[in-house]
Length: 288
Image 1 (cartoon, rainbow, N blue to C red):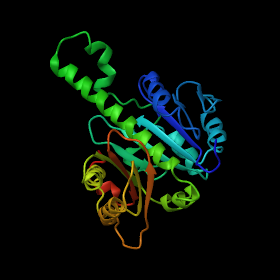
Image 2: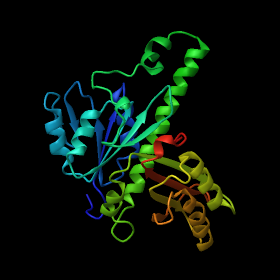
Image 3: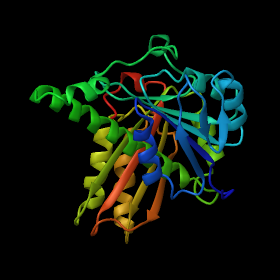
């Protein structure tokens, strides 16, 4: 791993571990600073090249995460509390992306969860996805549509996981030191993300507007970071993006970090990714 970038561990928990493994191998294997794997709290796991035993999960997991700067978990509801407890006792920062089929996505900074959101590791999230092997035998259009809708939501959550990894990987000493970002995130409760892509002469305005709309955090951000990807990003476009993003902060004294990355996108497309965190995020609209 390159020392200038944060060492990131991504752990996924889904009904079928192959779902997360397939995503991780396809989207995350290109990052030299990222390790990933599936987590099943009811069985032994191999994560980050180490064996995590079920009966000693917290001890083994704590030993593993001490080698990383950041932990990202993707799961159905908040039931990876064991991971959260380990993060609370360590010096790393944790991002939890929760998939709640009957509700909106929830995005937590670990260790700051409302009690009502906490579920024990024995609790299973019963959703339409659980019934897919049975339902697929029937021709009911409603069931099939429901299964497809749930699958799309999980896939979208995983796509946001990749965007988060890519944004954090841009945190380098000459841009935004990861330790500085981590210090700002400590004490925040939830975070929101938004992604927007656009082409044409107004691509910077259109892409930023889409990202802001998805994040739904205007005027609430206590921490605000944005990554902008594209080719030949002009000074005018950079100014347009900055002008739109400043309104997301809840206070003018809060710094705005914008990380520009020259990267090939389709045609002349520009992509803007917004990461906002704050104690008031729980009352903000849906992240996606």
